[in-house]
Image 1 (tube, rainbow, N blue to C red):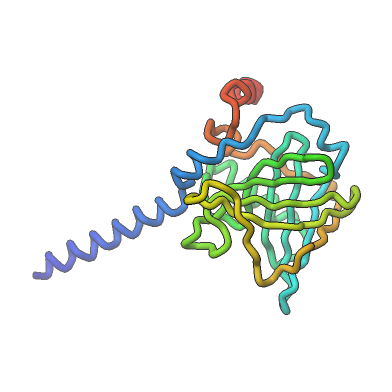
Image 2: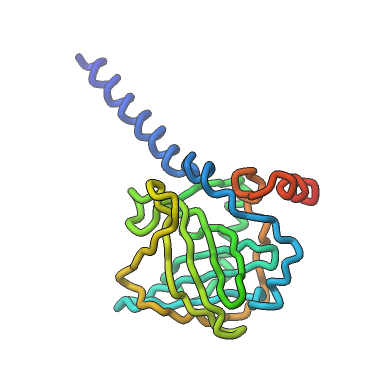
Length: 217
């Protein structure tokens, strides 16, 4: 009887570990459906928006919460949610530490994605938390910004890709009032944009562009 109980406990522990590992991996449907990054190596985006720092939004909560988004000239971006009002060195050290340890977790307090600029509008598409862990997003998310000027962006919509309808649908967060202004903050130190998902074929729209990136980096 005691051995039976021990076996049951061991099974539960092993099952929990396996389930946890499955949760932190990028879900299969995200890999299957993302395919957004074109590998825009010479797109001129850095002449349209500021890429030498980050844009910051402060939520309307009683306790201020901050959203940061950093655009890179190559068409990728880094997003972060934080209770701190600036990106300090410890965040960059944490980011580099994850990269050095080859950590590819789906669940982090920061996220990577790619963006496209159409006239005065930016569509920033990212992989995000699964809906069971985040009520707003279902794996693939899109933020839509209007370029006010070089120093300010206006967030006009946040969307999640609905798997059943196979399209992006708007979501509304209780702590955000739309439209929301993001203000640019310059940085003297920038993290590298060579994130781990750029090495994954599923992140890319075109196989040849992905191979070109792999040869270059």
